[in-house]
Length: 439
Ligand code: NDP
Image 1: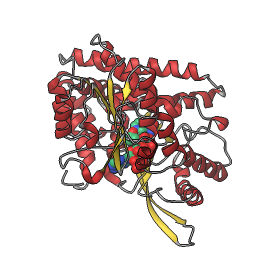
Image 2 (image 1 turned 120 degrees about the horizontal axis):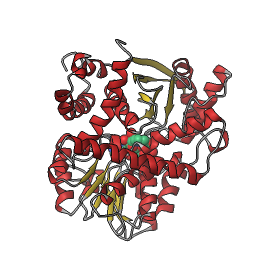
Image 3 (image 1 turned 180 degrees about the horizontal axis):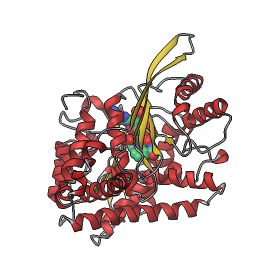
Image 4 (image 1 turned 180 degrees about the vertical axis):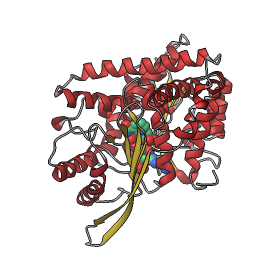
């Protein structure tokens, strides 16, 4: 930690992984002999660049751009781009590190990468977003390629941004290739990619519950976030017979006991891009809790009675106090759509309570898995139906659950899917690194 004191989130993620793979390292000395831990925490490459663009007033703006190419032992780098003012080198490093194990767990041939910028898209016009994306790609294009590194979306990067970046990539290279995923459906995108992370987190929860002779049917659910992951988590929860009663954005939380109005949520966030405060205008019986009224030790969204929770906004949005409240209120299942949304203390509480807890790198892997399905369709110049992709996604989520569960059982901690997911993800990458020699 002394060499990089500012990378708090990276150390949090690395500590969790290294702590939970200890039983594997103790039982198989090949990994220590090959210095796998020392190698795997060091990114293969980190790129930082200046992004210069002109705003609508004609003023030149400057942002920081990042791409981390963390590990390519099992395939080309793959991971999203995040545009959010909180982005820094430590956040990108933590996300890239998690991505290695997540991608490995999917069972597909994809390495780990991540990127983004501290650009804040909020309040920017379409033209400003386009100019920013074009400038960002003007540097990134030289580092990526369909067999090298294939970025996707993340916070602040959806279909619109992928479109502008793809257009610029094509202009610079003259090449029409599957170099980004999350593309538009009429120019190389895959059906189900938009829905995949949210749907996948719900499929993962259902797999966890089914293994305990339980299911989501009839359960009241808490969801945080109001973006891509949260919206499609809510959609799938309804399809599974559950009742999602909350959502949240960076300004506040909605609690709606009758169930979140999904068409309204989509309109507010996907079309009008406005605050959730607007929600209560259409539903006076719903409650809006602004951030200023959140409990001092956590987040309002976790303080309602429910049986399942789906953190789907951002890292460290669920504290130890929130975890205690969830457990006291009867939650038996937590499936993480976001990356590292629960603090380390909150995770320990879930594991101690032996509830069905699915860590992000397992539960939210449906997004990257479907991105790989987009790459497969692009490479073979084919297009699968919604049902075909959805069936594959369900199979992949089942596979991730089973791999994590079987590995947890192998190490005598059958309810600990953190250990199961980390060891299963690590082992595949580590074995490939050993076989590929000193690189
Ligand atoms: P979006 O940008 O679509 O939505 C993010 C949502 O979370 C928004 O409602 C946003 O509020 C809220 N949010 C973001 N940052 C904060 C914050 N610091 N405090 C409070 N609220 C915040 O992003 P996604 O839905 O794509 O991503 C959500 C999470 O899921 C992230 O952790 C991401 O890494 C993870 N993930 C996403 C995948 C994907 O396929 N998209 C794949 C795997 C993981 P507001 O509306 O006010 O901006």
